[in-house]
Image (cartoon, rainbow, N blue to C red):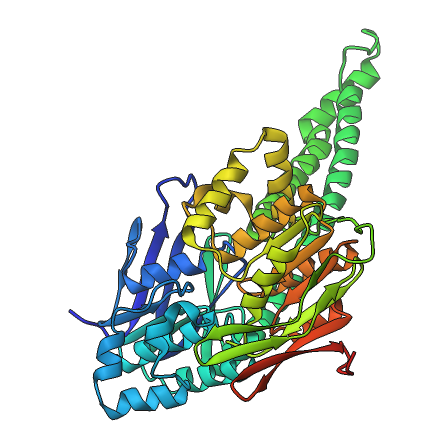
Length: 506
């Protein structure tokens, strides 16, 4: 029987390799409209989306789902199978989504040359065209420039079914979502409104929990000190009430002791001490109920090195063919050992192609670290296997740095495949051993949650290495880059102009 809602009923999920559940006792309902799924890298967001879509089934509990469901994964490696139906349907709806998302008719035939942002737009157009009862979308605005993000938001806003949205894009979550499901430590809390409202509410609750817990701790410490004093007084009184050290002929003292025992005065101190111990026990139980989120130590040092000499590489000026109809014209490019350069431009302008040319031109004696825009599933598995195959000391250091970039190593060890955000952190953590003179990152903030982005910024700011950063995240580039290589459109393609980061021509 089909439902017009999604319902998780005490659902747990374990991967075969996991000791602890990735998700535990998940309970929430979703109705027409968008529900955001929010959490740190490795918190189980993509797993929950797969459970909602019916691609995975819960280990315990149950899930009621509407039908049909369309799932849009993070990765865009393969051309979606329904593309022919979409392009050859000839109906108005297909044309509407092609216009809305600015899709070219030749895109399916040159899938390999499309940027990942262009692939994502086509993936979403096909999904929306199918008008499913539920649409599950994983990180739709990764890889997109500002204009493309607006196209995506406009398209998703018009969807009328049950929408689940995994994203770190606060602007998108606030615009679309009537509620957000926050994942932490395998548990979930559904909060009304967009992500900003939910985060503010969560922060208030955490502060209140900390205040309440501190009050309980202070009261417990006060009672414990008083109980210790009462215990000593009770022991002293007990010694005074003992006839062991009283002279056998001292009838007066023995009489007083007998009277105290008869009236119960000898037990007053002991009873007070026991009552305090009971109160301390109740406070201990209150402390157990007032849990405060554990905050891991964060921040790593990617020391790097400053290369000797006056240049890291020189790329000669040339006309790069991006497709039969499109080119990129570049002048001679030289990067110096202390340069921090932002490479910017719209989707499909040739940024990743240029990065590959640059990597090929770096002399062999220059140590460098590359974090690419897209890492295939096979590459992710290989990277994880390489790290787990390291000597115990090196492996421990890598996983420690991974943790300090804001992710739990246990989720990495329990998963068959790291999430895109986790694999980037793993590459950075492993890169510390390379002591690079040049760090090249292609869209490094894609797939990273906000705390992880802030940690990455600090790490790169403190490194001595030169930086070449491709990103659509202006705030990230403003904090790190001093120069800019900007790809600008010209008739038939694009050209690269060199600027200072303030926009003046260099």
